[in-house]
Amino acid sequence: MKIRGLHEHEQAPMDLLLLADPSPEKIEDYVNKGECFLAEKDGEMIGVYVLLPIRIGVVELVNIAIREEQQGNGLGKQLVMDAIQRAKRKYKVIEVGTGNSSIGPLALYQKCGFRIIGIDRDFFIRHYQQKIVENGIQCRDMIRLSLDL
Image 1 (spheres, helix red, strand yellow):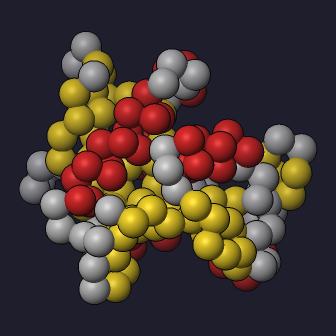
Image 2 (image 1 turned 135 degrees about the vertical axis):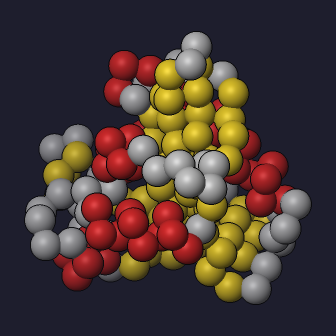
Protein backbone atom coordinates (compact mmCIF):
# COMPACT_ATOMS: atom_id res chain seq x y z
CA MET A 1 0.00 0.00 0.00
CA LYS A 2 1.23 3.47 -0.90
CA ILE A 3 0.06 6.57 1.02
CA ARG A 4 0.31 10.00 -0.58
CA GLY A 5 -1.06 13.48 -0.20
CA LEU A 6 -3.99 14.67 -2.27
CA HIS A 7 -2.71 16.49 -5.36
CA GLU A 8 -3.55 20.19 -5.70
CA HIS A 9 -6.31 19.85 -8.32
CA GLU A 10 -7.46 16.37 -7.28
CA GLN A 11 -10.85 15.84 -5.66
CA ALA A 12 -11.04 14.16 -2.27
CA PRO A 13 -12.68 10.70 -2.48
CA MET A 14 -16.13 11.54 -1.09
CA ASP A 15 -17.29 7.91 -1.34
CA LEU A 16 -14.54 6.86 1.07
CA LEU A 17 -14.86 9.87 3.38
CA LEU A 18 -18.60 9.21 3.72
CA LEU A 19 -17.79 5.80 5.23
CA ALA A 20 -16.51 7.60 8.35
CA ASP A 21 -18.72 10.70 8.38
CA PRO A 22 -22.29 10.91 7.01
CA SER A 23 -22.17 14.70 6.41
CA PRO A 24 -20.86 15.83 2.98
CA GLU A 25 -20.93 19.44 4.22
CA LYS A 26 -18.73 18.72 7.25
CA ILE A 27 -16.36 16.63 5.10
CA GLU A 28 -15.98 19.39 2.53
CA ASP A 29 -15.26 21.91 5.29
CA TYR A 30 -12.47 19.95 6.98
CA VAL A 31 -10.95 18.67 3.72
CA ASN A 32 -10.61 22.29 2.59
CA LYS A 33 -9.00 23.32 5.90
CA GLY A 34 -6.79 20.25 6.42
CA GLU A 35 -4.54 17.86 4.55
CA CYS A 36 -6.01 14.79 2.87
CA PHE A 37 -3.97 11.61 2.40
CA LEU A 38 -4.87 8.71 0.11
CA ALA A 39 -3.97 5.04 0.37
CA GLU A 40 -3.60 3.17 -2.90
CA LYS A 41 -3.11 -0.50 -3.59
CA ASP A 42 -2.61 -1.91 -7.09
CA GLY A 43 -3.69 1.44 -8.57
CA GLU A 44 -6.97 1.50 -6.61
CA MET A 45 -7.81 4.08 -3.94
CA ILE A 46 -8.61 2.01 -0.85
CA GLY A 47 -8.25 4.39 2.07
CA VAL A 48 -8.16 7.99 3.18
CA TYR A 49 -7.47 10.16 6.21
CA VAL A 50 -7.51 13.89 6.93
CA LEU A 51 -5.28 15.85 9.30
CA LEU A 52 -6.78 19.14 10.50
CA PRO A 53 -4.75 21.69 12.51
CA ILE A 54 -6.93 22.75 15.48
CA ARG A 55 -4.59 24.70 17.80
CA ILE A 56 -0.96 25.71 17.86
CA GLY A 57 1.01 22.47 17.99
CA VAL A 58 -2.11 20.27 17.79
CA VAL A 59 -3.56 18.41 14.81
CA GLU A 60 -6.68 16.27 14.67
CA LEU A 61 -7.20 13.10 12.69
CA VAL A 62 -10.76 13.94 11.60
CA ASN A 63 -11.60 11.17 9.15
CA ILE A 64 -10.08 7.79 8.48
CA ALA A 65 -11.72 5.26 6.22
CA ILE A 66 -10.89 2.01 4.42
CA ARG A 67 -13.02 0.47 1.66
CA GLU A 68 -15.30 -2.09 3.28
CA GLU A 69 -13.91 -5.02 1.28
CA GLN A 70 -10.37 -4.08 2.44
CA GLN A 71 -11.23 -3.78 6.14
CA GLY A 72 -9.88 -6.27 8.67
CA ASN A 73 -6.45 -6.52 7.03
CA GLY A 74 -4.54 -4.08 9.25
CA LEU A 75 -4.79 -1.21 6.76
CA GLY A 76 -6.55 1.07 9.24
CA LYS A 77 -3.67 0.69 11.67
CA GLN A 78 -1.22 1.47 8.86
CA LEU A 79 -3.14 4.67 8.08
CA VAL A 80 -3.24 5.74 11.73
CA MET A 81 0.50 5.08 12.13
CA ASP A 82 1.20 7.03 8.92
CA ALA A 83 -0.88 9.94 10.27
CA ILE A 84 1.12 9.86 13.51
CA GLN A 85 4.44 9.91 11.64
CA ARG A 86 3.36 12.81 9.41
CA ALA A 87 1.98 14.73 12.40
CA LYS A 88 5.31 14.36 14.27
CA ARG A 89 6.96 16.55 11.61
CA LYS A 90 4.91 19.65 12.51
CA TYR A 91 2.95 19.09 15.72
CA LYS A 92 3.37 18.14 19.37
CA VAL A 93 0.02 16.42 19.85
CA ILE A 94 -2.40 14.48 17.65
CA GLU A 95 -6.02 14.10 18.69
CA VAL A 96 -8.91 12.06 17.36
CA GLY A 97 -12.58 11.86 18.15
CA THR A 98 -14.81 8.86 17.57
CA GLY A 99 -18.37 7.92 18.38
CA ASN A 100 -19.32 5.99 21.48
CA SER A 101 -20.74 3.34 19.12
CA SER A 102 -17.53 3.05 17.05
CA ILE A 103 -16.16 0.07 18.94
CA GLY A 104 -13.57 -0.96 16.33
CA PRO A 105 -12.04 2.51 15.86
CA LEU A 106 -12.00 3.12 19.62
CA ALA A 107 -9.94 -0.06 20.09
CA LEU A 108 -7.70 0.77 17.11
CA TYR A 109 -6.78 4.23 18.38
CA GLN A 110 -5.87 2.86 21.80
CA LYS A 111 -3.75 0.10 20.21
CA CYS A 112 -1.90 2.88 18.37
CA GLY A 113 -1.10 4.67 21.65
CA PHE A 114 -3.93 7.18 21.98
CA ARG A 115 -5.41 7.80 25.44
CA ILE A 116 -8.96 8.88 26.23
CA ILE A 117 -8.99 12.52 27.35
CA GLY A 118 -12.70 13.28 27.46
CA ILE A 119 -16.24 12.81 26.29
CA ASP A 120 -18.24 15.42 24.39
CA ARG A 121 -21.73 14.39 25.50
CA ASP A 122 -24.45 14.45 22.81
CA PHE A 123 -21.99 15.70 20.15
CA PHE A 124 -23.61 13.63 17.41
CA ILE A 125 -27.11 14.68 18.51
CA ARG A 126 -26.16 18.38 18.34
CA HIS A 127 -24.14 18.28 15.10
CA TYR A 128 -25.91 15.73 12.91
CA GLN A 129 -29.55 15.86 11.87
CA GLN A 130 -29.81 12.16 11.07
CA LYS A 131 -29.66 9.50 13.76
CA ILE A 132 -26.43 7.43 13.56
CA VAL A 133 -26.49 3.80 14.69
CA GLU A 134 -23.44 1.51 14.67
CA ASN A 135 -23.10 -1.94 16.17
CA GLY A 136 -26.72 -1.66 17.32
CA ILE A 137 -25.82 1.38 19.49
CA GLN A 138 -26.98 4.94 18.89
CA CYS A 139 -24.00 7.22 18.33
CA ARG A 140 -24.53 10.10 20.74
CA ASP A 141 -21.23 11.03 22.39
CA MET A 142 -17.81 11.77 20.95
CA ILE A 143 -14.95 10.02 22.72
CA ARG A 144 -11.88 12.27 22.51
CA LEU A 145 -8.41 10.69 22.45
CA SER A 146 -4.93 12.20 22.32
CA LEU A 147 -1.33 11.15 21.75
CA ASP A 148 1.75 13.21 22.63
CA LEU A 149 4.17 13.14 19.72
